[in-house]
Image (cartoon, rainbow over all chains, first blue to last red; front, side):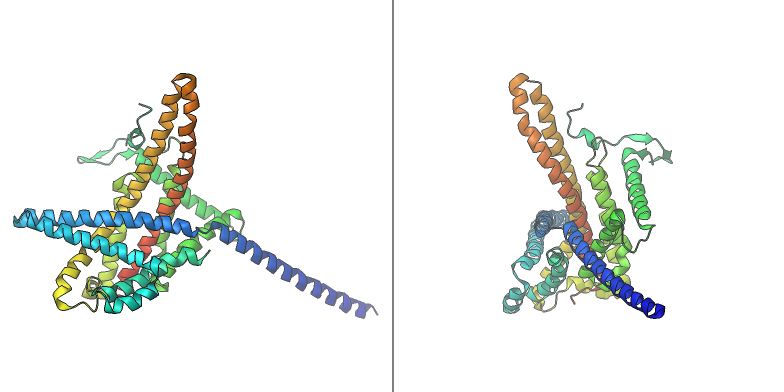
Length: 143
Length: 250
């Protein structure tokens, strides 16, 4: 009799323990979910971050182009042609980097189709886009 | 002058030190850099020393910091990029803590000086160059040669790519520096308006409510910018590291 009683109690205890573990698991999962969601940056932050990135990159590209042109003018003594040419190149580089990043927002998939028959730099742009994409989608992926 | 918005960026020598004509003085900037490193290290070490399976509040702050950076790096540069985790994490935490330090009244903002941000950006740039050249040799320069470009356009496209590559360290440093500098000046200017307006009698005191509201809003914005700039800096570092590991696409 006492034995049966003991096993019975053990079984009940096991059941209770399993139940408690299960509820603890659930509570932990809920807790983690809310905690993690609270601390992640919202997608509008990512957009703000990108806006800052685009504006500086565009301006700095032009300045770097102008500086290289100025340097070449100084060294080769062909002013103002180096400045003119590299300022334009810097402008092109700025536009390119902005388009690269902005293409991510539009839709990389659509660019794939357009890009193949459109411009010469498209294939490279796509591969860069994917790299950009994975980095930049991150905050929105986590919401 | 108390109302000078630029005054907060003045470097003052705390311990003058001159070695062979090189000025190595310990300045207020150095002091806050040391404080940033000390506070962030102490926080991370203290909160993770318990190693609780169920993290406490502070430990989960550290863990979120870790996971946030690790996910950012893994998403941008793949699991190979995790080798550079110490670099990215240090940069992120240093910039974040330095920016937040700057939000305390009378504290010095380390990241509002371009020499500091430029040094950080050059560190990243040099890492990318060295890692890229060591791993790929001259194949690293494939980064400048996009595939599928017709031959006659090649010189032009390469020149553009080189310019945009050289742009990186500059935009990387200028972005952080300019944001912190401009934000703190704006904050100071609006706070200065309150003082000068309230000196003008009852009308002035009533009017000074407007700049006060603005200052409160700007303070909130500055906290956001502090975090965002650290995040952007770390995220771009991840992307540049990705370029060093996989030049010429994937």
